[in-house]
Structure formats: structure tokens, C-alpha cells
Image 1 (cartoon, helix red, strand yellow):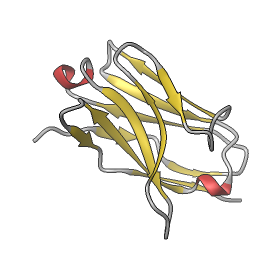
Image 2 (cartoon, one colour):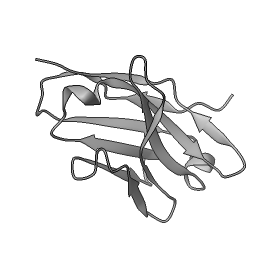
Image 3 (spheres, one colour):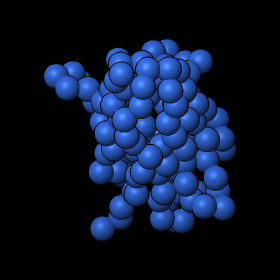
Image 4 (cartoon, helix red, strand yellow):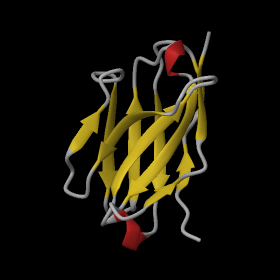
Length: 115
């Protein structure tokens, strides 16, 4: 079973930063658009950001200017850099690898922004 390995979540104070990582198998990584969704308690899952195999980036308006996404092709890993975090960013963040014909998901990582 193909797995995406996520890491980097945790507890951070408002205004702080975190970087999430998502590693995919090599044959998946080079073909996939890598991205993140998040789900806060009691809310629907929402799109956060993604980066395609060519490096084109898309970021949701709700996090634009604070979050960015990148990928390291040598490590088969995508990163979500989150700066100026706010309590409203508290959620479980899920990595996805979108192949078009299929979508693979990570196990999710908790991000909590609180003082």
C-alpha cells in the first residue's frame, strides 16, 4: 500500500512558524501534484496549497502571504512552510499526492496554534 509520510506538526504560539514535510515514493512523487488540505474541529476539510511536478504553486487565499509550498526532488519530499500562524490555522493537516487518475493521502498531522 502506497503511503505518504508526513511530519512537522506540533504546538506553536501565535505568530510562530512550522514546516510540514510530506515524503512520497519516488515513482509517485515525480508525477504528482503535492499538496495539503486541513480540517479544523467541526469544519469541512479545506484546500491549503499545492505544487505540481513542474513547480507551479497554488495557495489558498486564506493563507496567501503566510504559507508557501516547495518540493525537493532529490528527497521526494514536499514542504509546507507556515509563517505568522494564527489560532484559526489550528487543524489537522493532510498531505495529498494527486496523480489526476488517483489521489493518495497522508495520515495527517496536528497543528495547534495557541498561547
